[in-house]
Length: 401
Image (cartoon, rainbow, N blue to C red; front, side, top):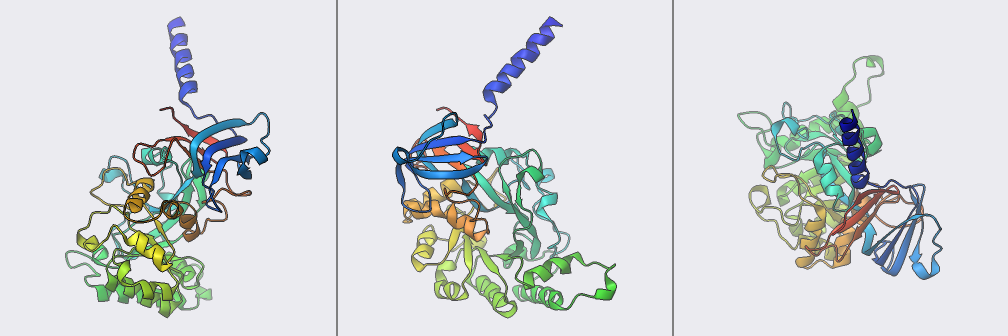
């Protein structure tokens, strides 16, 4: 019995040493604080109370309450935002039994909800959080004409309800070779893809059958919100011809459209700008073959110079074990001509704006969620570490190097 007590005591002691320190009142100090709401602040401070930011400014002129937990780092940024991922619906070991982001039984399934498949305990969630990623736009991914719904979560929480920020963010679709049927299954061509999408959207435009309330059509219910402009449609389209197909659908149905992937976006700058769409650009280091054969390392810079709103993402590639990391993708965009602060915008405030969460995350401003990432150097340098991560005022990651 004494031996058992010793083991339990040792286990509890070890847990106390490794568990995150949860605190709702935190002061974060940084030699440089990038608020993404103005110029960087030298020797800045961020004050968080009850999970919300209450003050941001120079340490010399910002009141720092006594008794608050204090963290410090060389560089402080908002918690990073991944504008499109399948983390939580795909597993770290990349095995079939943990892949819930794509259902291939039929080509159009907008009724599939990310909330029903998301696993907050997935090790990938913890992994990306350790690099400063605090918000995910995740859910059903590419590979089907309409694969399902996406959602927005924080990278913390024991249940999906704990993590949830927005249960329905967008409906995910795909035009191009990635969503063509095989073995004679429909759709077998691009023209069939567009025809099937048009047919589904036209059906959703029809008035609801008030007499047939008992016969619910889940597909139609979701697409009705899409054609009403209440739910954005995110279409993955990489080739110029596929991007143009998506833009024609936007014009015909008045859709709130987001272009995802966009490998050949640099060929359609005028068209994208005129359409007023936002772009969730493919990862900078995406493998340039197949649908991405004409991808460019410099597209992020090109979109920025053209004034087209965009964000970077981790996305999904079947070949990649685990997942990409938006911090590294943004760093590689810097190496290929994108200004460092602009790159930081693509994974903070610009990403938050595109997924409709800029009122809560993406910048360090009073009233926003207390989500902060702390680094021991330039975040885009490979040798830099995320030393601590704060989500809603809770210190969820703390590492010593």
